[in-house]
Length: 134
Image (tube, rainbow, N blue to C red; front, side, top):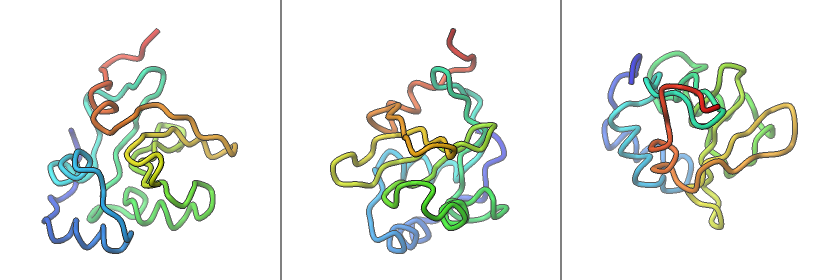
């Protein structure tokens, strides 16, 4: 990962979870504690290109999860956590809903449809490649 933000402490991550009143999936917590946002070297997931992962704290407002969530309001489902965007500003979201917990969705903001693209954050990270698939 490049251009990551200052490392988070476990306490800062726990504060974030408390604000959300939820627990984040362990694999996502490990990732965010290690990277706290940034630009991945392997940035393609199938046909999707990740521009950046959002941080939990530190860095510019537009790159922080809470800011993105606040600005978008009802544009994404309440139980979705925006975790990354593509070059067009569309979002990759982590579901925190009980029945879809941990699944990753692509959330284009120009329509009310979301698309399941990975069953877990591990699957999502493991599926990232350096080149777009044909």
